[in-house]
Every structure is written in structure tokens, then in C-alpha cells.
Image (cartoon, rainbow, N blue to C red):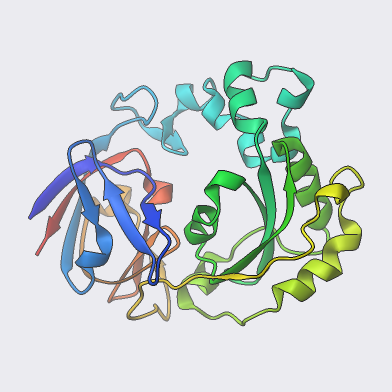
Length: 264
């Protein structure tokens, strides 16, 4: 069976194991059902996720001109501490910025390659943890806007990582951690403005990924160089497809590419 569509971040369903879906304009695929099947991936063209044109993707699925113009790619997306909607101050589009920034946000601890701190909208829990390949996570602060979450993350980055080592995450070379203990240890570093929102009593969330075989030496597929690839799917973790020859393909970092998928 052959499918064609533009790659966007896989949709997920929190269950055991987590369910993954590739969503195209006229089709969707439950990727879990492709495990142990041979998949041929072929690059077709670009399609910017904003303007829809066949223009080279610059970042986050957008062409260069869209990336530097649209609010969905503004600096505050990656750096929440730069949010200004709570001050009624526009960056690129105040209406959009208020919609996204002025809603409950979570500062969390997640263990994907090691314990890290992160920020997400409350509506994106546990989706954000799934996307990062975290096998355990916990909320530590729930604040009313993105700015407060951002300054909290910045304060905690001095004492805990804020990045995931994707190779370690994919090899599953990780240790269980007591995130309750980590939360208690980090509480003293939370900024005064966010301290009233500290979450005192909750439990870790544990996540189960559909992986039959973890790669020993993950090799990231660059579809723009190879143009096509064939392999047997043996796992899905984070936003990565894992193949039997240790090749891994990051769907998220290839957003905006139109591909053919042939399932044998």
C-alpha cells in the first residue's frame, strides 16, 4: 500500500503502549500497525506548513520567509521567557500571542536521556513528554501564562539539564529517577513570582513506547541526501521511527517534506 503526504508531527494517544498516527490531507496511518513491516520512504518535494508552497524548508516545517514572519515561529516559542502578551505587548501578532501565551502552562521534569526541565501548555500534557521520548515525567509548577513558565525554566536550567540527548534516549540507555525527590531539591530555585504555583502533591507519569528493538548505534536518516530509504520498522519513540538496521528517522525534524510511503 502506498501513501503520499506532507510530514507533520505524529499525533499520539496516551495508552500502553502509546499509539502513533501519521496524518495526511486525505489519509491517516496508525503507525503502530506498521511495526515489523518493511517501509520504503521517498522524498517527493517540499511543502511549507504555512504557505503551502514548494520552497526549501528552513526550520520547524516552514520556508525561510514564513519562519521570519509568522507568530508560530517567533522566538518566544523556543524561549518562553521572551513572552510579552501578559504585558499587552505585541511581537508579531498580539491576538495569536494572547491566545497561546495567556493560558495555563506547566513546568515539568522529564526523564528521557537524563532528568531535564521543560515548559509546555497544560493542554499538551502528556503529549509533550511523549514527543520527547520521556519514560517518566512530573509537573512541578502550573502557572497562568507562558512568561512565568519561561522564567521558571531559566532559573532551574542552572541546576538541571534542559536538553534531551537523542542518542541516549533512543538506545534506552537511561536510569529510573525519583522525580519527586528532584522536585523537592529544585523547589528552592523557583522564582518568587512562580512559587505560589508550585505543585506540592502529585505523582510521576510513566510512559510505555512501542519498541521491539532499541538501536545500539542510532544513525539518523537524512532523507534530503539519500532521497529514499527502505527498512523494517521495529520501534517508535519520541517522534522517531526506529528501523532494524539502527537507522532512525525523526518525523518532527522533517516536517514540511512531502513523501511517498510504500508499505510492504
